[in-house]
Length: 543
Ligand code: TEU
Ligand code: CA
Image (cartoon, rainbow, N blue to C red):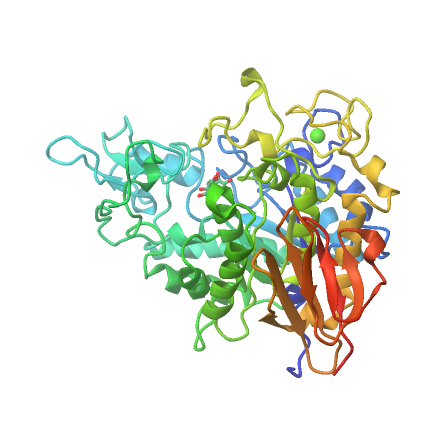
């Protein structure tokens, strides 16, 4: 135990809001900041009747032409008129703080919008003072693209501009030109955009594609991926060693961290990709800290494959690797859903039992040593919505339908506007029965399980600060124990099988949380049968 208070983000449960889809307050069919303010009591009213989350992360709220729904920023220091004004944001910050909640914004440092004044200047002429703020290159002598990098969204990462005939680099859409972080003026200007919000009282940021901001100094070609075969994703044709997690990126991350350290109690969580070791490196080292938290996407990525679909050995391996790679004092952060990925239930619904797996997943998420993030609507079991072709909005068709299915409006009740809007929503609604009003008073609902799980975590020292140790269990049960000095240990067992499984808890205890509420409060002697696809937590007597 350290003498100083534990940093808030170690104990927090963070709720991700996709602002367009949470609550519309002015009848234009688009969610906005005033709408979020109206719904804060749902998130945390200080009692166990509310969800009980400690912090909110808002996907981008800045002015943007919305080519990538806000991940194309045209002004880092203002609010998009669809969402409100700076004054509304100030009120949202104050309203969060009044309830003891933190507010995180979403910082997009890798690229701006092509409508950002910096880029408009940069593209105007070769000798423009902002020319070097982005990457401009001639075609190769044979007329081909400056290098072989591919856009994450498909196609080459280069587009030719009429003004000068040169190509500019965009790792995502052509409307999202990459900033040149090796230019100190860019770094300074971007650091200042963080200070702008930190000065206003924002508690931190989720940082978009953190690992791509610093590239190979000569933008060298990526080597071919020997495992790639025709039909695989185009972007994996080459190994992204020169534009993703390039070694110099970690120094830039440490300098970003130092901006956060100019303020008290702020937090940076990075969207990073790669192996457990690459993820761990974003936390910095003993000499210099990096990010406070870095997302680990392996629970999503690996569970997407049929072979490891909701599989105990895979879950165990991911957590084992993360625990082993983490630097001292670092806390993992497992992503289980976000605005880029299929909804959890839809990802695990091959046999129609996704909802049961979602119940087990929240017990797992709150039981693991990590800072849990909950994507809005997961707590009521929202699923991917099948959207007719002509209503699709996502320009990045990285899957056949893009990412619209997981971005549909929050369903507050069963009314025609679902309590979300008085008019037409910007994306269609999902299944009528998955809504807050229908679940809020039902003790067996998924929403009630989320509330119990979050509340139990909040009030249980072993879950907040305890270490992680695996325990022996049948091969299709993922089981571990969380333990802290002087506090009762908590053992967790997640049964992946569609049959009951018996698990031994040496020392026994009391079932304190279960996917099946009827089990809660039961004393455990030693062995307990965990229901099919179910999960339980057993609080053991203090040692
Ligand atoms: O995502 C980065 C990213 O690489 C993802 O797009 C991911 O590869 C893909 O969605 C997998 O399905 C971030 C944001 O989360 C995303 O919404 C943005 O579109 C992207 O950056 C560009 O800013
Ligand atoms: Ca609105």
